[in-house]
Image (cartoon, rainbow, N blue to C red):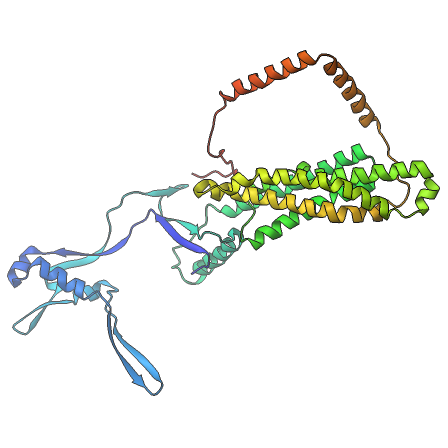
Length: 400
């Protein structure tokens, strides 16, 4: 047996049986009914329990093994004694191997008749470990147990799908971290602040994985897809930017040489306290919005609860590290030469945003009207959207 396997569902092939073809003339000659023949065979195909023999400190269980193994055992079953002469099954019927009536047939490639087995994994098991154990067991069966003309050939392996899903999720996570870090670097224009913000992402993910493990849950495609790196690091961005701006103002007031020599712990502490309340409530609001998903039951609960737990734990981890680790790293990395820089991208966005704001602010009625039209149009388009329980999954395998 392989640990983690719940069942094996078989299709195709023939189910071996021992068939007894009764000769009615012989039954009449011996005066035996078909029911007597049936009872004799049925009673000879059972195991019976006996007593227990005790010897010294050991006990031996006595039992009778009566299960039929081959055709000859069936032929030699005694049906009846007539004048001291046993009447055997061989005297009344022809015994041969046969099969149950076939309800279907399985073909593969150019073979029209094969036996297929679908292995069902027990709920909660690790697919990677179970599949590896199955491959080892199949190799053992093929080399030392099965007949030479019988071989188990795996034709559909879910390990490929599992590896592909893990690779896709890992690839997307790495891409997300790099893109978010790159955007932070562009707008904050300082590698130190980028490092401080970027380090929160992997730590928040590790915190979420540890919490999921502690609750006996596992990460899946839905739960990992729910992670939004922008939401995770927004608190860290607010905290770092607040500290950076406060340090920049202090450097402007006292001059950079004096700023580099002075202690900055008090300023960082006071700024972090000012930003902590806003960061805490912003994360709390998002986590509170996940509460309805925690209450899901049955199928929807099984599917979407891990999503809410993963995102909630990631946000909680990001909040903890934002309030504790970010100020500490700021005091370590932002000791010298803190100067706020506006690159061309930031200047361009600020100019266009200010111009756009001025234009819309000057035409308030038009702005409100356009917003209302867009909202109504969006609600109208929503009525034409299709719905489905889950999107189709293209795993890249051809199954014939």
